[in-house]
Image (tube, rainbow, N blue to C red; front, top):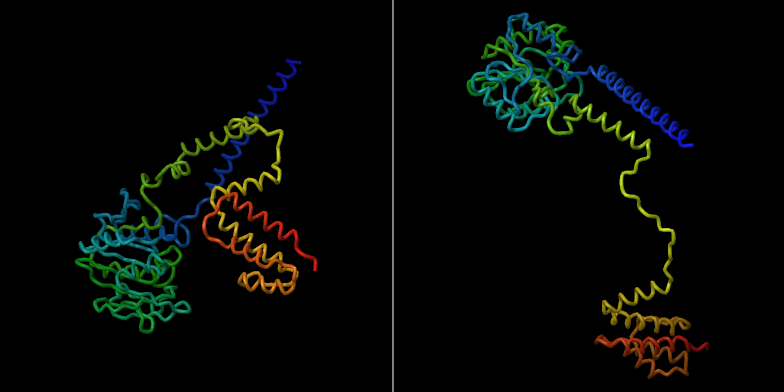
Length: 395
């Protein structure tokens, strides 16, 4: 018998180990498939080949002999690279005031910022420079030059920015370049020794938009009117592309984004499944009560009485007996128990001529007392009330 039992246990453990290994392999395969399918990159990312990426713009600028710097910042916070002189900020995420302040400091040193887009991050940049967005009901099609400055190279007669947003501002130091009706779509202004160029459309910079007529010419004109000439940097910080050392912050991200963290999670999962399948307990067993004794109703009554005795609620008990006595005696005659005691006793005497009005009035007066009474006195009054209610006449 022992040999058979040991053999059965051994076979069970072998199947258990095999099942755990198969589960681990299946989880690994599923994670690999999921990672292989996760090819979506942030919009306007300069390394993205997707329609809303800007890799074509990056390669095109490099073909035009422009120097394009590396994407990632090797800092813990956002700081524009000091070696960059022109910054493309295309549909960024939300910026805080500290980042906008660092951006201003960088521009004032003689650099150029080109901020494009009409999403929340771009509108935050525009509002920071006192340009409020004006939203149109449909895509703006009537785009024309406001100044003859965009002529190198010449722009086509029709230019489609695929945007529904223009700017309004109370500033008087900006130059409008593209307008629709009387609202500017593209402006520039000086900031310190540098320059800021705002445009409410980011599509011309994308892989898909760069193919459209006028997009390449528009970007070259921006570079030509820029005060700063030098290395170009694409702001990928506000697209979520951070330095390698900043990608893993905290134990949660370490578990989710590192190979060691994944291995640790797999080990925990395998151990948990093993313990679960073997029926191991995770704590001390809780004894089960085999005999459950219910309390008698008298115990609850006694407990409530003891609580009232400890709390000293004798005045409240007297008031309750006072009300119950008047309600019980006057129920037959539909007398209001809230009327004064003397009037109540007088009316009750009219219905019941055998009523001892003096005794009842004395009892009601004793029940209405507000001074402290002893427990024996309280019991005596309760007995008298019970006798009165017991002897309610039937006529």
